Length: 202
Ligand SMILES: [Zn+2]
Image 1 (tube, helix red, strand yellow):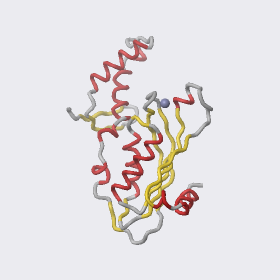
Image 2 (cartoon, protein in one colour; image 1 turned 180 degrees about the vertical axis):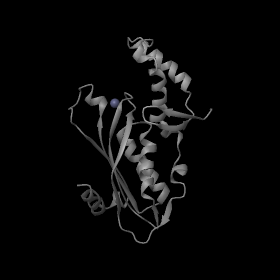
Image 3 (cartoon, rainbow, N blue to C red; image 1 turned 90 degrees about the vertical axis):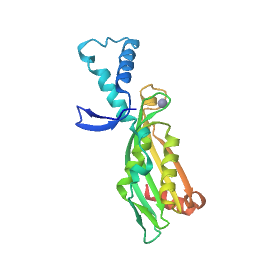
């Protein structure tokens, strides 16, 4: 598949993608017709093109890899104190409705000689969030990725999200927040470690 640079006009953002934008654009146009719209009317003329680019961006996590993201930002750790990175924003799409869910990710780990540059945690979260997801799997994939990269004594991931597919369709309470978590290693085995991590999140 051809790789090309795409710009999102409204944001000034540009990125490289291998998504077939022409086909996605044609599909978006058809989609507009199917929901009862007229893709020819003024306000919608550029919509299929915008939709194609937006979806290439919103699903770019499929085309990223852990190695590329970590890119050598692993350092030698001195001690084995718990490291907690709180409040990493994420924006994802639920795989059941392809509607957004978003919120925050909190990560804790106890190093085993290796630590990761702090900015890399946000990039790992983003790589998994920018795919079709369920919130439970998002937590597990982030935890497993950190496990793989750092081989820590343990890792804990808590994801808090609100789901537009629930809120917009009115089947759940409008203000309901979903919390999911994944605990590996000492975070799974030791209630004390888990509590210490969860205390940090209060
Ligand atoms: Zn959904």
